[in-house]
Amino acid sequence: MNENDTSYTSDDEINAELAAFEAAEAKKLGIDNSTQHWSDPVPSGFTLKERPHTTLLVSGLTLAHDQFVVAALSGIGYKVEAMEVPNQESLTFGKEYGNRGQCNPTYFTVGNLVKHLAHLRDKQGIPTEEIIRDFVFLTAGACGPCRFGTYVTEYRKALRDSGFDGFRVMLFQQQGGLKQATGEKAGLELNPAFFLALLKALFTADILNLLGYRIRPYEVEPGSTDAAILRCKAIINKSLAEQTPLVFALHKVSKELKAVKVDKVQPKPKVMIIGEFWAMTTEGDGNYHLQRFLEQEGAEVDIQPLINWILFMIWENTHDTKERMTLRKDDAGRKGLEGTNPWKKLALLKAADVTIRAVFQGMAYTAGLNGYHLPDMDEIASLASDHYDNNVRGGEGHMEIGKVIQSVQKKKVHMVVSVKPFGCMPSSGVSDGVQSLITQRYPELIFCPIETSGDGATNVQSRVQMMLFRARQRAKEELQASLEKRGMSIDEAKARAKAKGWTALRQPKHAVIGTGANIVEQLA
Image (cartoon, rainbow, N blue to C red):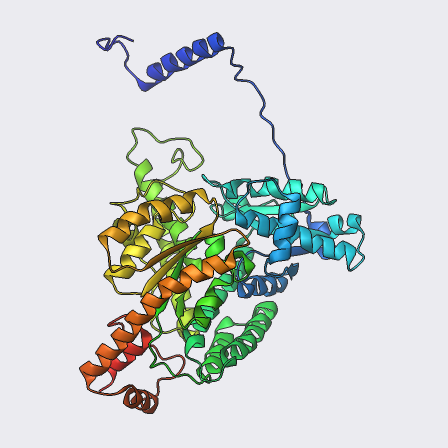
């Protein structure tokens, strides 16, 4: 096309010219655009009449999340069963029946399903045909630049090769929501009641997990926090299953946890765990029991609750909608604005963000999770934007970068551990690539990237221990500085804290990093 040619008057004419050129070039190269690509759909039919005798299997998050999802969905009429947290045996099943070169979460999650079905068949004696007929696996899915988008194909291969060909995997996209309703006669109805029950379960599990990691490092009687957590789980499970007001259950939870005896005036290093979603969330062999290992080494662990991911997805949709509004014309893509009112969409997303935050904070306050602040996703994106393009997606996206920078600027933690599976493309690129620049710009940052592969626990834990030594020293120096500032010894500080009623649920105002040092800062 001559660059001086001004005969084109519309985009349609330009597009028509480009389409003709594309067709001509394809013909020269012998490319047949009508080719049907190979696909391997997973059986997923689940009808309403099958619901009474069909059990939904759930797994993949923390134990509390899985248990509460079981209770919540049972409360709205489903038969649900939680599988155990993936372990080394799950990894063995995954490697035996999965493709080679997969990432760690694939082997663990796919292997965990095959292991469970094999147990039903080989240990409980349930015929394979009955398992295929009476059980369905419910899991989340998403697309993106990593292998998470191919999980469903991995499930299909592993199930076929292990003798469970035809077993149903129900997949609902993380970016979907109510638009994915499966039909009036579908066995799994993705309606408001389903998502309300699901969100209540997920939020409550987030809150209980956060409380447990806050209290456990400071318990006076070893095991008392875990015992209280078990009683709290029973209270919440009963409320979710019977669909009674959750506020009463959360109030009982606060009483149970408040009774745990604690000594918070201690130099405990605060360690934040970030990284690939599954690797930082699981509580088993998939990440070498990282959370409990850090606690055993004397740290207070700062975990990432699932609500952060939900808020991130809302932010993504808001950001993308604003970007699309700048185009010359509305696009007709999956998330395009053609035929929609973008301002209405933005208003709904804003309402969703505000509502979710308000509901979560209300539930957290009732349960005794005081002083907890959900992340400002705009702030996280702004902090990361100079180092990681907000439009690059995959894994945690720019969140890892933004959270690390924020942790230094606002003195949130002494150390950051980024955990991801060996070979995880998005997270490895972020943690091992971009984060190296962040550590140079913030030399005070203690950053420990680790990769999981199912073995090598000793090497990983040794690496964490070495970095944790520095964090432990900083926590001690920090507490000592606070004590000297207040002119008291640590024994005097402990006595004053006890006299002033620093219970398990009371949280000091943020001045420095460590919990103990913050308490000392507030002692008169």
